Length: 232
Length: 232
DNA sequence: ACTTGACTATTTGTATACTATTATAAAATC
DNA sequence: GATTTTATAATAGTATACAAATAGTCAAGT
Image (cartoon, rainbow over all chains, first blue to last red; front, side):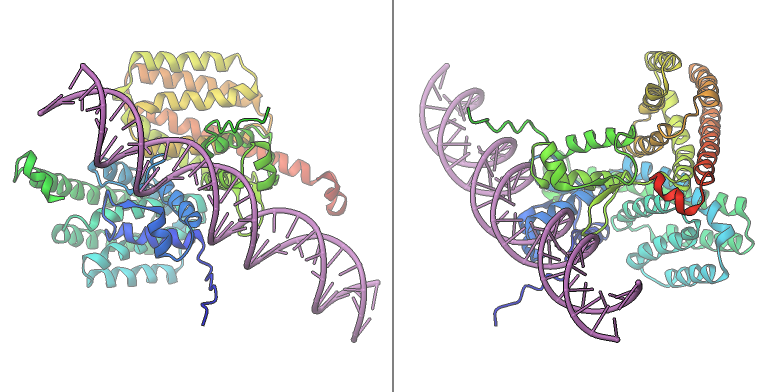
């Protein structure tokens, strides 16, 4: 039976989504080289849709696309993490400010449900649920550009969760802050909610930043320059 | 003489830059349909680089790219303008906060020179110089993602200048605010500078918003529904 | 007369073939 | 033996050809 060309709507957007997910959860670690031909075979398509999807991911900051060279998964450096979360810390409160008056009880309940599930999940699921929690509360702001910007930043931020095990302090504190954020939303208290959200992002960012620096210090010390190379 | 294929590095990025400039200054007005083949002929290339450049512009919000249909220049609606400037009003102060300690006297002088030129320019040049002024003061913050985000927002915002003649009130006020911003930079006063910048963006936004609404009201009233169609 | 359906033309999306560029390795020269 | 040059292989970039999808038009039926 000659295989009918299925062409299952494997548009570039879908390929980008698949790759995005893998980069976010660390299945494709930083500095992984992505050959167009390799990906084309994997997704059963030609290199053209692959090129477009790589362009999309480049624009989002998930891969680097040097001219005439293979794409590589973007590195996870501390400076980027700080920058990304500084941007979240101003963008998300802006969205929340406009979202709160539009928030329905239904939507708050949904955020609460997500939060409850997050509290009984492991770190891998927690990262995704954390993102969902934030987006649920912000969506009613009805600002498509702002929302897609925030979603993009959350994707970038999420990558770092999977590199450092910070469950201990991180998630416990995060849970508390999410709960007070929900309370402020229930009360429809804009200024309180925005402040909580901003401080939540800044606090989480600080904790993660410390963990990243500690990890980098730890992986740099143990062996001296030469032998450290073999780690990779 | 058979024309040697020049292939003058007409990379997609360059085509995107050319189209971007035309969209920003209104040479390509909203709702203009962009046929890939037409553009390919104009830029003496194939449709492939064109496709990529359109993707870039779509991501920036300058064109819409509906599936299986021709690209169109993005509309200029008031809601988008408001959203874009809300985002600028939080992103630019963030950049400025980090830029101020790094600002050299040289860079401040450059911003001042740009401002002086802007004050003796017409509206068309003013828009571009306005953008340059902002970017000059923000660049030293050394945050590539944030800067490219802001640059993108400024491009989007700039489009609206060319649709409404608001020179009168707008530019006079803008000049005053730019000058006090420079003064705050000279004094290296972070909080004052950030506040001035934020209020400057918000005030400019409000003025433009009013002008846009007034214009829309004016172009909608004169004739009733049916005959108004012919205007377009 | 208006709606519905098929057919055609136009345009986007994808694949394959071809070109140019870059990196690697081998060879030659200093 | 080290360094520079050159050749070759691998990979990205581009063009052309082909397939799929959409919109517009004309005809037929109600």
